[in-house]
Length: 395
Ligand code: ADP
Image (tube, rainbow, N blue to C red):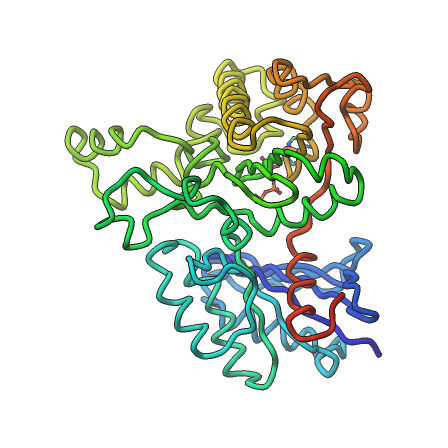
């Protein structure tokens, strides 16, 4: 029986999991799934690596399962599948590692306490990410746990790329650009190295376009700048987040519209972006299929802002050798990739329309100065690798 590593990604209302067989030091996906609706109408679904359903459960509305109940169910489910004895470690996705954690770390009570102190920097995510760590530490105290951070990969950025032009009395409190989606960028940097070593050694911009969207400039595989900043609301417009916003707008919302902090938070995080602009949906598939003028404008604004950020990141990297699209929209929406590449012609991007329609992976024309790739991301696999590496089993 081979050893397995469990990867957990806990949000406010869901707990996603993936189980990797780590025989031979190379994690291979065995099972994945989630418990959704933790505090409303919880439902559990697990699938094997081929996508076949291997477990499902629905709880009554108002059960109030919470993270506690979800973890307990998952542990029982794994026991039923007789994997508990082979579980060698759990890897967690943790949004914020602050300044102190520039790499994944083995969890200790001191680490957990340090991560909890970062909660004010990511109040919507950090406490939920930490909940399963604390629950498992009580349930199975001997089980090694590893925290992997969305911010860590960006700590390599030059100081100027991380700084705000604010006085030290503010920046000294940790107010700086952290950047997020780091596990995705780290994974893509690794894949690019395998598929296009020349481009990977140069200047690359990776566009992670999902519900949360951001872009990152890499030089020789290291992050030098990213569109997300102090929080994950900065940068590109997203499914429901506004992205880049003149801070004067926030002052106007307070002064003139009398909005309080929570109302502004709701507006910027859940009522803006593709959903807010279109008034229809945060889902790019719905917008692309719609003939509504508002859907068309939301897409236009999304791709326009992508083009501007691409220029800004190419400037930060000192040029552009490769452009990579990844995540839900990046991997599956040729129409969006086509617009972005058309707007990036000035950077030397020439698209191969047929390759773009068929999904690549290389979608640039032979004469393109910039290599353009579509590469599926895999943050869970990255977490499994870090976890295995830290418990001494990985390659
Ligand atoms: P998350 O950030 O939640 O991980 P994903 O990476 O799964 O999100 O991306 C979700 C986004 O991808 C949604 O906007 C969805 O509409 C979009 N998407 C998924 N499949 C397609 C597709 N075939 N065409 C266009 N957009 C797609």
